[in-house]
Length: 195
Figure (cartoon, rainbow, N blue to C red):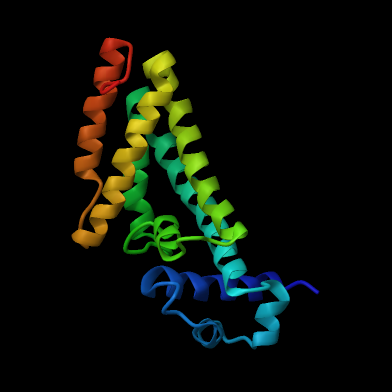
């Protein structure tokens, strides 16, 4: 038997609120049950384990993140701004309903040195999707150098997310500024900077 959509949403909302703000290891299933207002039988009807619940929360989070990023891209007026929109989207997502202190995917990977298959797949999918989207957006600017430029931008993006742990009020402005220099250098030189 599957869960009703409203019940699944309540469970995922509770899991996100607790896992991505308090930490996965420090959050018990009982805490998720209490916040969601459901029984353990109901939760386990939809999610086989805590890790399956986490993987589902990450999958939903990725869909929401992509929607925020797509909206930032749609507002951009140039190829450069479309590529740099990822940094604008970071700050918008953080300010939204499911925003957190830093990246839920990085946090989940950090808490599980040897993650279960479903969790590993969710983290790998997020990384793959980030890289692929950045490559596609970089191609009009960097041509054959798009792959390397996308990897450079992914490194900046990850660093910006990690800075949120060091400085809770950190935003993506510095990373965006550095990224703009890389992008303009790649556009001018016909190859990504640093390669």
